[in-house]
Length: 252
Image (cartoon, rainbow, N blue to C red; front, side, top):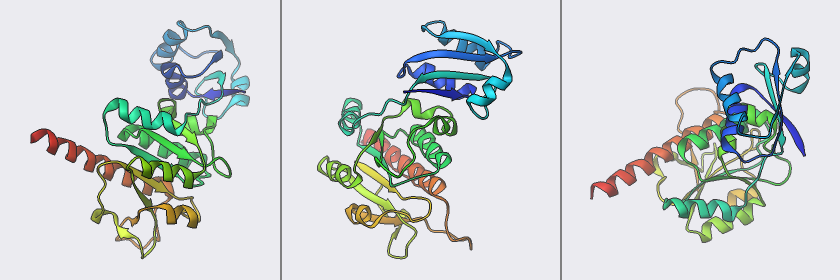
């Protein structure tokens, strides 16, 4: 299946990652060959891409926020859970996994993928059905960060069971009184963070599969943060906890 990726940063990251088959690069008339555009053209020169100058109206039909460029590629290359586990072993790092339970908004998925890439997540697990996949809109929302991430589609309870067998501590992010404040929870070591959907949170069966449920303490009067913001905050808290633990081991 072919698709069009729009926008300069997303296109640049697709080319840099070298994980997809590439077909055509369309550039709008009048787009100057400098900055990120020049970076893209240098990468494209090392590939069998067909490069063509086109009218802006043509690009408008291929995607929003195209910034004068669109790239035709194969579909997103999903990974497997064993691939993700192997990556952590190759890096000699404690497992760090993000599990997303029916995130449906492409913007939220893109934000979480971008944060996950920034904090060194080894891979993301999403459901096979009823959830957003890595579409061109998600590539754009993540600013291309998803191209450097391993994402697998799986039955979540089965995936969590596999993660537990690989010694991961599985915590679910829930805005409920029964959940413990996240700052009282261990976030280093082998860890899988489960983030629920925008409206209903984590589904009951998936929630029962978690070892522990946590919430973000809040001082404001708004009920909660959205899934992408809350998930990103906890990912950074885990990133800091893991870094402190690593530095502590090095100092001893």
